Structures are given as C-alpha cells and as structure tokens.
Amino acid sequence: MFTATLITNPAMVLEPAMVRALRLAMGGGDALWLDPNCAAEFPMNSVPKNIDAVWESLQAEGVDLVVQPGANRRKRLLLADMDSTMIQQECIDELAEAAGHGDAVRAVTARAMNGELDFEDALRERVAVMKGLPEAVIDEVLKTRITMMPGAATLVATMKAQGAYTALVSGGFTAFTEKVAARLGFDENRANVLVSEKGVLTGTVADPVLGRQAKVDALADLTTRLGIGAGDVLAIGDGANDLGMLAAAGLGVAVHAKPAVQAEARHRINHGDLTALLYVQGYARADFVTR
Image (cartoon, rainbow, N blue to C red; front, side, top):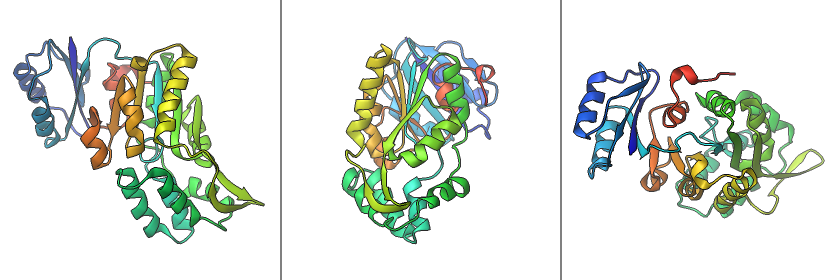
C-alpha cells in the first residue's frame, strides 16, 4: 500500500473537489483530512505510471504531492540542513554582506548549492573574504539578519514529542548552528568551524570540511548510535550537498530546493512550509506541538 499526501501553503485552501478528482483518477481510497484547509491524504494500492505528470500539474495549482509507502511513515530521526531550510537565509551570504562582499559571495553560493561548483573549494573561496572581520559580527548577523523558516520550531517540537531525535547538520558554521539549534530545540548540531585569532576571523575554515559526504556519514553515525535504520530517517535540505543524505534516508525531501536538487530528489515540497513534513508523516494539525 502507498499513501498520497496533498499539501498547500497554509495561506491557501486545498479544494475538496481537487482532492476527490485526484483520488478517483489515481484509484485511491477515502480521503483523510489532516488539516481542513491545507492537507489531505488517501491510500493507494499502486503508484500510477503518470505520477510525474500528475505532480507537475499540481505544482501549477500550488499543491505539493508526496507519494510514499504507507508503512513506517513516522520517522525516528530528523536530519536537517540549516541554511535556506531551517532558516530563511544563507549565513555565509549574510556574513559576506557585513564584510562588503555580499553580491559576489551570493553568486558563488547560488552556483555551489545548485551543484555547479565543488562545495569545498567554493566554501573556502567565500570564507576567504571574511578575513579581518570581527567575530562579534556573527552575533550581530544572528540578531538582525537571520530568521527561522515558517514551521521550523513546530516540526522539531512535534517530532521530539513523539520520541524522535533531531540533528541539525550543516555545511555552514557552528557559530550559527549552535544558536539556531538551541532556538529550535534540536538535540545536536554539526557544522564547519570558522577559524579566528584574538577575536578576528582569519578567512579560513578548520579541516575537515563538512560537505556532502559528511552529511551521509552523519546519517550512518546517528542511525547506528540510535539503533535504528535508514528507513527511520527524515532528511530535509535544499542544496546539492544535501542530495546524498536525501537519497540515503527513508524519507528524503527537497524543501524549496535549487533546480538541480529538485531534478534528482525523490520527494519535493515547494509550496507548503515546514509543517508539510509533519503532514507527509501522517500527523494532523491537531497533533502539532508548538514552542
């Protein structure tokens, strides 16, 4: 058995007529409304051969569709990217803005996250422009430029309330992940370390660089430590360096992702906020935990 989940942005309305028409066209069972306004699901015996075309047509209507096996939907580990996933910005771009190199660094970041550049080389190139920047700027950037992604805290709190472990695994920097993880309630965080001397950034990052393979390794490490399988993992991200962990996880979802990532990812959310990741696990709005 499979489950099809339909989700819209919370500001929109998921039309019952659309859900009914899709359910009948896909040979699905009765619909269960997870939220009366923006999320519903129904079971299916098989996945239609034209599922990609169905997904594309729903995207034009502002509706996300996730089809997955009906068993083991509620995951026991959340493995999440940070930049442009759990927060609305790219921290390295915001630091570069403070250093007076915002436009140049944003262009490199966009290409790196779309898989057009080697991640480690691009990271070192962008960090180099931070040389001489006071460490105190990091706290200022966190305070004035960084905002949480809608639904982020609810996603973490709800999964933790059901016993899941949560880890923030970022190709960014610990100076940011530590604060973001604490604010959102993550159990742990992993990221790169910006090197500084006497309160000033040196323009370098400590080895080894946490990139694509390190995120896959984090999934393997955490599942072993927790005594669970890859099928128990929800991994989410938006950049090319997330593709490895998205493929390895039982449920890997590209969230508002770069074009190259969407082309490879099995599941994509483009319209819903991060609470969409709860709906795809079968949580109803009434199950949500807020903090």
